[in-house]
Structure formats: C-alpha cells, structure tokens
Image (tube, helix red, strand yellow):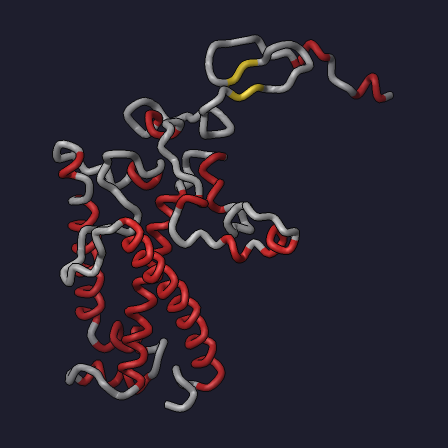
Length: 260
C-alpha cells in the first residue's frame, strides 16, 4: 500500500539549471549558493530591489546598538559566553524568507520612531494631567475628558486641528526622508532601499538618523556616539512600556496617574 501511495522518484527529479538553486543529483537536497541572503530566489526584477536583496550589505542584529543579549536567559544560564541577541519571535530574520519583509535596519528605525513618539506622548500626558493646556475651549474639553479620550474630543469639536496634525506629521516625514542620503549618492535619495533591504556602505542612511540635532548632542567620538544612541533607545523602550502602563491605569482608575 505504501508503495502505491508513494510517488515515483522520477516525478521528484528537477532538471539542473544555472542559478542560485540547483538539484545536484536525484535524492540530494537543494543546495544554497554561498553568500546569498535569502533562503529562496527573489522575484523582484532588476531596478526594483533585486540588486539589493542578496547584496552583502545586511548587518545582523548583534551588530546593532542595544541588541539585548542579557534577555537571552536560556543561553545565559547555560553559561554560554557568546549568544544571539534576544529575538524570541525571529522577527529580524523574516527578510530571509521573503523580500517583502523588512531588514533589521528598517525595524530599528521603526523602533526608534515609536520610542520617540512614546517619549513625547509621556511628556504630553504628564503636562495635560496637571491641567496645563492651550487656551482654546476644545483643549479644555479634551483635558477634562481625560486621556486617551482627548483625541476623540478634538476630532469632534474641531476636526481642523486633527487634520493639521496629520499634515504636519506628513510634512516632517516627507522632508526628513526624501533628504536623507542625497549628499552621499549624487543627489539621489536611498531612504527606502537603504533600510528595507539593509543599510549599505556609503548610502548615507543610518537607521533613526534623520539629520536633526539642533542642540549638537550627538558626540563625534564613535564610542560616545554609540552610548548616546543606547541611551535614546533604552529611554524610548521605557517610554513605550510606560505609555502602556498609563493606558491600563486609565482604564482601571479613570486617571492617567493614580494620585493626580
């Protein structure tokens, strides 16, 4: 019975072909060419990302500032001195499965942006919870409604303020992203492929660096700069956790901060 159900080996034979994947002999497994990033052959055509997908430009998570080795408790308690950074869901390796998934560089930029927004949000919640707000009646109503209902009050009371906020965010994102990398690439912006397919040497694109440092806080020394990046990253992560905590505090008590 098993012999009848099993397909013939002839139907499993794949003709040898030139390219990254080839079947050496019948019964042997597929062999991946050395140096190729993806597990399979990318479908993107030339000029639409194919030249970046398998290029040797991708940095592993371990090379990024703030890669949390200390959270890999399994390896730590085994006494291993060198182990992979903490990524229990393997999100930083999704780009190896398909080019439709972002590289670590893109994920790092997303993490930094979320952290920055969370830090600004924490400061805003703290200030408005103390009763400090703009003089317009809609802001007084939003403050009285409490967080996180304030945005809904503003959308209902004065939708124009909400759309101004969206327009301002769009302008900031557009200007900061389209200008990145131009000085290093003959006037061409490489923001998208310089992060989605991995930050490349000479692209001028560094995850999270939008060229905005009016107070000149970023040190010139590379080690000091890494420490500054780590401080921002950890403060951003803490702020994201704090915002989640404030949210659940508000759900249970009706206040953003219990004693306020």
